[in-house]
Image (cartoon, rainbow, N blue to C red; front, side, top):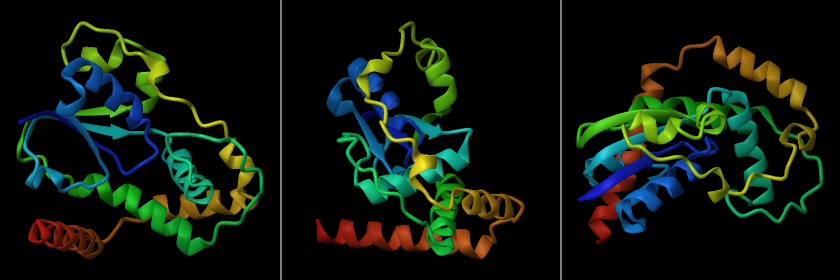
Length: 193
């Protein structure tokens, strides 16, 4: 059985959590996933759910990462401004918000929410939340060299879309559709094995 699973919709600083937990529990005892239903097939003692309080920055970082194709290893050479369309922005927003709604926590003994901002502000935060006396090594993950807001030419418009979306409630039907599509993918994967 795995020691821990780190859940993230992406761009929440989860690599810092992952690498520190791998150093503590062992590399093969911790996995990192963008699949909120992996708990159905991957039981572990601990689920660490990686968040970012600044959701707008997480979404913008996702959009820049898709454009640069740099998520954990950075070249830092991309310097071309680009425009984000509304559908692309809304899709990234909805994925980020719905992800947390559908995480399957039933196979875990303990589920802990971690916030990127807290991990960065306090080196003791990560392990103290797990009742482990150890300091977090922030140098395990390179920081993105990009100023994400400067790369997106219509960042003000993205802010408006974000404010509008934040004021809305995501319909339960949309959450159910998201969950069903992930389950279908899991069934295909499990059938192929």
